[in-house]
Length: 17
Picture 1: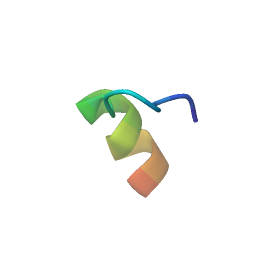
Picture 2: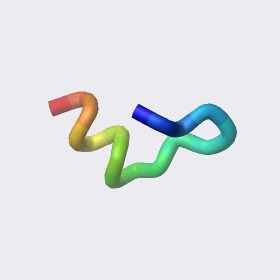
Picture 3: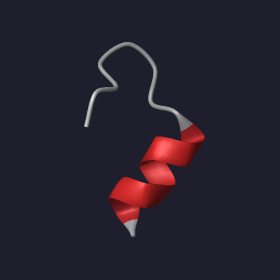
Picture 4: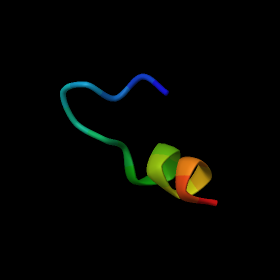
């Protein structure tokens, strides 16, 4: 989880899943 500035859609999807 490394999205301090701007949360990537791809990363968010994986984190939300």
